[in-house]
Structure formats: C-alpha cells, structure tokens
Image 1 (spheres, helix red, strand yellow):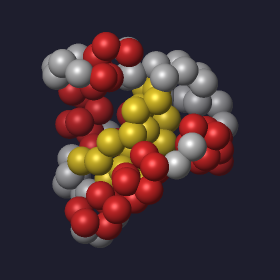
Image 2: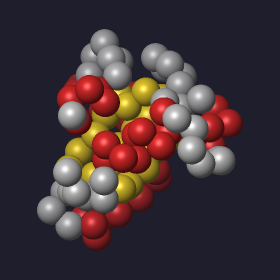
Image 3: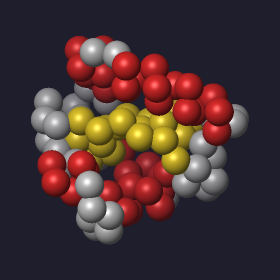
Length: 95
C-alpha cells in the first residue's frame, strides 16, 4: 500500500497529537508503534493511529499536512471525532 497519506497519531484519547505525512502508512505506523525512530512521537508516546486520509500525489498530501499543522488543536480534535468518535486505534484497518 504505497499511497501518499496524512495521518494523526495520539498518545491516548485527547492526549498528545502528532500530524505526519508518508508514502507508506502501514510501515510508518509500525515505526511509531515500535518506537524505531527517536523524536517527538517516541518522547510523547504517540502510537495510536486515530485519523488518516489518502491522496493521489505526495504534493497534495504535503499541502494537507501543512494545513493541519498550521491549524488549531480544536480543529484536529474535531477532525478525529468526525472520522473516529471513539478514538479507536485504526492501524488494523490498514492490513
């Protein structure tokens, strides 16, 4: 599954959020879950995939990621709640 995607991982419901972009969402979520890279998500325990969108091209995905990163936390929470009101870990949907 190599589709450009924008995603949000969380430490817990209403916890710390991280917004990212990738060309391989299942692999990237595995990296977050297994803490394979040092950085923000490892430091704050952001392992739960709570929201994602796929795009046709990487430039489209990057534009969306920048839009989300520039937006408020409230907008991100509303986006998560609209797709995933129970904040379940969506990584199983990717397999």
